[in-house]
Length: 521
Image: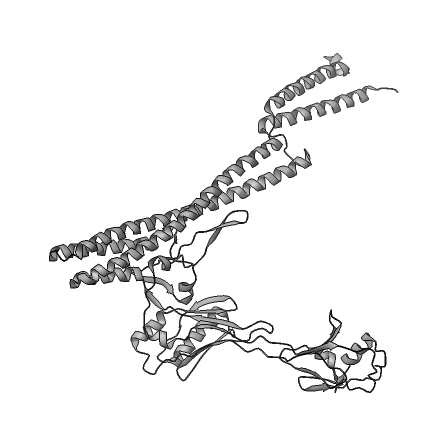
């Protein structure tokens, strides 16, 4: 084979570029410390690298979640620890005041100190973390307590009977509840007012709509040409042509004959479905909810289910008297949130428009409900002073459900007990002061119980954090094994590549012949 100068030059340039490219790759490995930079370098390794990076990203987020949960619980535990110390001090003061040997001046000093300790207990109840009030349940944007010790959140049946839960995922399939109920800590003191006897509340379920149908085993060995298989749906009878139903009866011919039963210009297939179920039973089922299905004769169904229309859910019963609407009571109604839950969708509403009687109050609540749920979802009506809440236009096949609730009290049992102690000090009631020590001990035990629960959750988070740290180290090592370059090896290979490249340049200078330009020089 004839080798020309052009061929030698082309081969030389190709090999020079290849050596330069290899040296560039090794230089990139050295400067980045990585041996895989793009999918083409090692497709299998890239897949592993992406998986490890995803694992590390998840662990990083879980560690942030765990840190947030730990911060929340630590702040809550510190607030409760403070409350425990404050109650211990209050207990000592009450014991001191109850012995009956204190002067009036000493009693005033004890009262003043207890009032200040009470204010600090209120302040601890309004403790926040990252802008969220930790004891306010799901209403974390609202303080738990007002300055006078009353609740600033809605204390309704749901809040009293259901402990709020807010879980943070801290590992795969593992979540920690960080919520602590302020109502559980501070207690709820029942309050009697006209709402308890006038405002309806409770849970009600309506009747789910049902499609009427008949079903049973059909005897295909009989001759039905003289039978009467006319079907009636919702009071309308559809005449069936039985002439083709001779012995033995074909299943498809039977279905066709029934579906083509006529009444005027309509057929049975317009209002009912005809089919055989998995048990080979003939089923004739009304298409519309609330419609009954019957058959004249010749076929005796073993199951007959009547069609039922939807019966909406209703909560009512209490009555507002004619003298109810004093200005004081109107103000209470305007300030009281009515909690309504329809189909699992909860909203709290207040009357939007002025009112002076039960009719106007119901109309004002209706306007608020329409804004909260949309029109034609909840009906609020009044008759003879009774306000009634009902579902409206519930979709067929869904059970109507409604829950109506309202705040039952705004008083804390813990702080009410402290108010009683202050009153006993004012009146010099040493007997009741002594008896109040039992209430103080009860609140201290409640605080200790909740602190123990928080401690258990805190310990769990600490164990999970340790596991996350260990997993993070493991995944980083796995990622390093796949992605990181062996620097000693890379430096050696880079030096070898550099030597090869220099050698190729040197040999190339000998191969490329001198040109006419070199002679002109």
